[in-house]
Length: 259
Length: 290
Image (cartoon, rainbow over the protein chains, first blue to last red):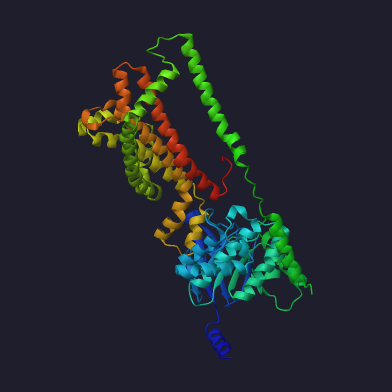
């Protein structure tokens, strides 16, 4: 009981995992400068699943890179109350010379985990994504869906092991390159893992159905420059109506670019 | 009770079973031998046959084209007197020491050229240019600088192999998919950790190709140096043996020397580099050429 109390207290003191205030990003200088993001405000609660939705050129990937610390904002502020964010890309980007287990262990090593516990933690994470029995296979011996699950285990290893604060997963269209059935299975898998690990997730996609299925909240971004257009909370609403509504807005955003 | 969740789990397990690439089974040993062992043996036998035929036709005088058997006798004689081993040892240990020194010099050099833009701009093309300069061209200069000493021989070996090894490493690093170091940074790897755990292993196939070429270059540079720079204090290596054969107008000795030089080259390739390359490529699923 005490433990439950303590965690809930800890929760209430930190009520946001990620805060972006007025974040802008401009690439290049002078006349050739391109504004990728313009004054984006976004708050993500600890353990929240937020989907960022937008057409090409909405700066989704730029936004993730800024949160991940791989890129810096031109203006605005970023505040993180999480351990080191982990990024998952469209490609699994596993190290081809390492086995699945070694790939996860590499992330743990970079996160500063000692040699002794790396092995057991890597096994546990691979079990979590149901890949315990292919831990010793190399990436080329796995299917695309399995590789992406190893990448998920690696990302979890990175964010869960690198601090006591809750984790944060940044996902840049991670399922876009997979076939429809595999994508469907992996979406369910991701939801299960998210519920088990209590990690906050920012999930970038251009697929409205995917966003509505996965997210607790869907944020629609405009294109060139990226701005927050609208947000939908998905608690208890009929998903078909929301999909319709989001699609309408998305079309409006895209057709605004026809000249 | 089959909830939708359970069925999806089953679908996932089924997909894993269906989608995972099927690993081809290894052919039995005799089949592999038939495919890879027999053709070179047949080629060798044919070559000897053609040689024997040419000799029998007596188109060339005996002192220019000896019979295979007389070359064989020369080889057997030098092996049974122990001379062959001392010659091989003299050359091999020079080549191995020279090669190890070349690896130690070329690896940091290659890293610098690959990762530091100024260094690449400054000496990148020089390094490529040196690769096309026959290392035998360094022998006269080296003799003037160091005299006919081991230093001359090692200098020529280094000039021959360092550019190949460094260039191989540069090519290996240039071919790393940019996503891998990015993943490393996202996982929190510093520059050193990234070099040790991501850049070097990712560049390994190119580096290995460079090492292989570097070995070949150091072996032929050594032969060039030994043929030209002969003196009693240097001892008799394969190059001197070849040089002596030529001085004595002994074609049997010359061909036996060439045969031994080839034997070392092929032996190192088959015993060292081929298995290493196979292991590295197989681990990455790059089995197309194997």
